[in-house]
Image (cartoon, rainbow, N blue to C red):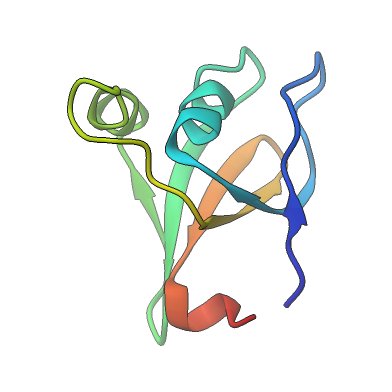
Length: 88
């Protein structure tokens, strides 16, 4: 699958596949139109995560910035793709 480089958060929640860093992902999860966050797990499906918990874990004082996070944004949901699912 192809992922676009994410540039910035606009008024409307994005739709598509993006490669983000942890700061950009946190900004997306804080977006007023974000309905939630999930992770796609191979052979199982999509599993909802606690949005507030993920936002807290992505704070920069918890760890250095993480790069190369592949996500799919769809209907206000940010889905984190499992690394083996996205490919290059």
